[in-house]
Length: 574
Image (cartoon, rainbow, N blue to C red; front, side):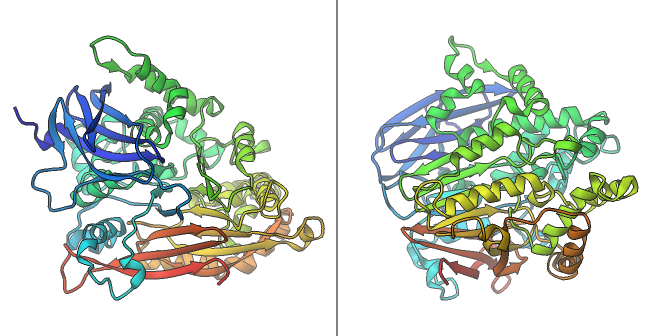
C-alpha cells in the first residue's frame, strides 16, 4: 500500500537546528511511526495523540557541522515527503557552520487566506510565500527588480516568528466554514475558536499551502505567541481577564490555545536537552509499550494550570551562537502580573530569567519580544499615562477612562508596564555599556504586533547619562509587521497620526500630568514607518549588523508569480 498526501496532515516543519542536530515535527492522519532519512541515515519516532490528533517530533543527531543534504519523511515506511508531483526543490536540512555570520528572517502577524486576486485584494500579497518562491527559483537567478540583495543565494539560518502565527479571534471564511459545520456560530464564542479541534484546523490552514509548507520544511523556525494566537488584548489587565473569565467559553479557549501552542509551536522551540527537561515531553520519552501515548488529559490540565499559575512554566527560551550572538526570546503575554498595585509585563521569576540572559561577551545580543520595546515616542508616553490613569493617578473617574482607553486602542505594550520597561531598559544599558561582560556591538530588540515596521535607535536620557558609563554598543529596536495582514488605508492614517502626529505632544503632556517617571533611555527613528506586508532579514558579523525588509508585488496580473521588492535597509553605523 502506498501512502498518500492525506497521511501527512501538517508538516514537516523543520524546527530546532544547531551544528550537529535537527528536529522535524509532523502531524499525521493516524497513529504511525515517522521516519526521517538524510544522507542514507534514518531516525524515527512514534506518534502521540492529543484530542484525536496524532503528532511526532523526530530528533536527528550526530550530524556534520555545516552539512547540507536533502531529506525524506516516511510514515510506517511509506514515503510521504516530498510530494512526488512537487515542482519545488527537495527540502533540505542544513546544520549551522561554526562562526559563520548568522542570518535570520523575522516578522509577525500572518493570516491565512488564498493567494488569488481576491485574497491579495483583502490581505495583500503574502510576503512569506513570495520569499519562498524566491528561494525556490534561486537556481535560475531570477532578477527581482535588479536588487542584488534579493539575489543573495544564502538562505537564512533561522526564521523567527514573533507572534500572531494564527488568528483565533479574527477568523477567515475557510475557518468559519469549518466552525459552522460543527456548531452554531450565533452562540458564544461565535466565529472565534472554541476548542482544540478548531485550533488544529486553524494551524492546518496556516501551514499547508504548498509553497509555505515547503519553506517551513526547509528553513528552521522559532516562534513565540502574541495576543491573537489566543485572543486580542490577551492579559491586557486584570479587568480584561476578569471579564473573560466571567464568560461561558473563555476557559475552553485558553486551555485549547495553550495546549495547542505547546504542540504546534513551543515544542519545536526547544533544544534536545531542553526538551528532556520539559514536563510534558518527559512523558513522551518515558512512555513504554505498544499503545500510543494519549496526552489529552495531561496537556489540558497543564494548560489550565499554567494559565492560572504562570510561574510554574516558562515559554521563553534562549539560543547561543558561539561568541557571535545570543538570541533571547521573551514571553510578553502569559507571564504578566495583572494585580493593579503590582502590574508587571514579566513576573519576578520571568524577570530573573531574563536578567540572567541579558549579558554581554557576545558580538550581538538579540531580544525577541512580540511587543515592541520602543514604540513611537508619543505612543509610548500615552501608554505610560494610560497605565497611571488606570491605577488612579487622576481619581476613580480617570481610572475608568484609563481602563476603557487601554482596551479600546490596545494601550498594553511594554510602555503600559512602566516598571517592567524601566527594569529591562536598565539591563540593556548595562549590557551595552560593558557592565555585564564585554559590551556587544549591538543590543537589538526584534518585534512585531503593531502592523507597521520601523527601526529606532536609542541613547541614554540626560538623567541616566549623568550616572551611567557611556554606551559602547548600539541600542536598536527593529519591527517587522505584518507578514500578511495589513491595516486598511483609514487605519494606516489613524495609526500614523496616533503614533507619529498628535500623540507626540499629547503623550508628553499626559505623561507629565500623570507623573510618569522619566525613561532611562530616549530614542528616535532611523527608518520607517512602512505599512505593507513584509518580511525582515538580519545578518550579523563581528562589529556589524545589517537588516533589510522585503515586500512583494504582482507583475502583469500574475498572482502565481509575485516579485520581491526591497522596502528599506539599515546597517549599524549608517
